[in-house]
Length: 274
Ligand code: ATR
Image 1: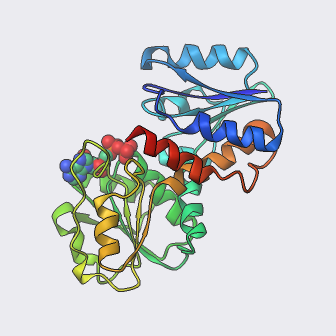
Image 2: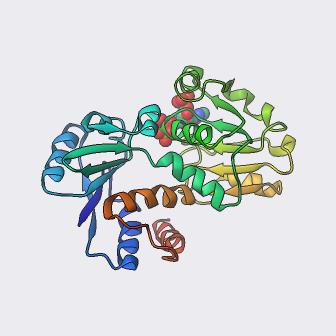
Image 3: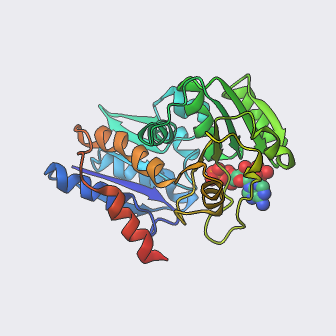
């Protein structure tokens, strides 16, 4: 059995390491391979791999939106988010799904936080935010607010994904901290090489949980500042691992094995890349 991940760039993807560890732990006769494709070559490469008998592909930047155009069937999550990170080749058809949303929610739950009934502030309105917002809505969050620099993109998410969402300007993002249970960084701020995301945690409720979608570095300034204020911080590595589990099962027909110690494997790899 063969599956893989396609993107550009792809060399730094952690998915092959993670999937290969699960393959070994499950004792499968399978491989999971990275494929690079320019936007122009994305469709022909996917179709060639489909014809070659692959089980499916994870899709990463910049192809997540384009992936939808190749699918015969699109899940509700992929459709609403407007992007697919998973293509499976099933019975002569291509199915598109998005496991980022469910991965985000699982990472919260594993950290002991159930978003059901919670009030959540999402920072950002790009692809990551669309997946996070879809996941939160689906998991029964009570109130959602999105703060973004470009208000139009936040309003679009409110219209297309979560209708009762409050949209706030970027400079007002701290104004809701005394009212929300969870704050999500779904911007690209804090990523290695980008400027950090600065928050004024002083007004936050003591029980507030801060969760990042960024995992390079693992300890962003957003999380470090929240932890310094004694708030709970959850890094972005959990989301990466949890979005991989449903993909593994879709490709290989068995659940990703427990206890494969993926987190420490990936932490070591990220440490080496520093
Ligand atoms: P992704 O797919 O990872 O979400 P993206 O679609 O490029 O990436 O979105 C990046 C997010 O980070 C956006 O919400 C962006 O804000 P805009 O929609 O206004 O562009 C946000 N972002 C990036 N740089 C920022 C900055 N310097 N200040 C505030 N927000 C920023």
